[in-house]
Image 1 (tube, rainbow, N blue to C red):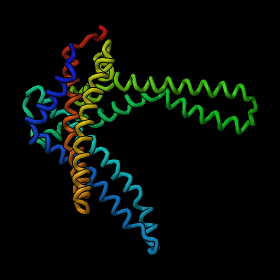
Image 2 (tube, rainbow, N blue to C red):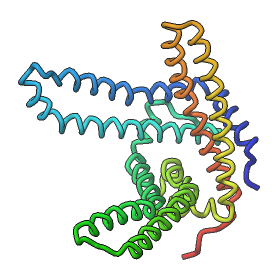
Image 3 (cartoon, one colour):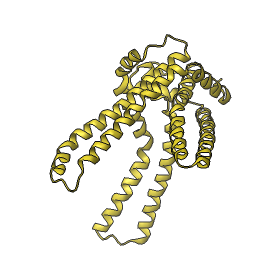
Length: 285
């Protein structure tokens, strides 16, 4: 039987509480991409000076470099998150937990595959709704060019695109859950992208609603806790006023960041428990 929502929340909390010192290192590490982004944006703003005729050409020359830096920052974000996934998995299985340096070195091996899995799963989930939006836009553009004048047919075609778009929403929701474990299978298990997505389908087979319910249930609990904390902080900051508001805003950001390992732990634990209680088996070659 799949782990219950209450047990999932409890185990995630205990893992987070018992290993807070280990996990907070990764929380601090995940600040790096944001800090680098702020620095890059600040440098870019310094270069944009209307009264300096040289700043324009310099900024134009630096644009490719800035774009490359932003790509590297995104890669850093994925890298650190993947390292966190692997560490949480080791903690849950009570395996030896590597040092931060070794964990990052090991996580480098799965960065590209992990990102590829996210892109593949995302594309598979959204392709119908993307096709409906793009197709409808292309259709509207085409009828304007050819001066199409058939109101009834136009309405029917528009309705069909709308229905396809509605189907796309359901398709996106269904496969967002169906493929939710794909990136975890790649990052934790080190498998190939295609095989990991197949594993995710197997783990959610015949229990889509169960996986969906546990993810939604745990997410609602986390959301409520964050909302309560942020509301209290905002109220206290409002009573103090001035610097108090800024401190409250800063503390709210800290709370949102500190909750990250807990939310990752929820899915990692659910992934491991789903493997233990797998309903379907892979087809034999």
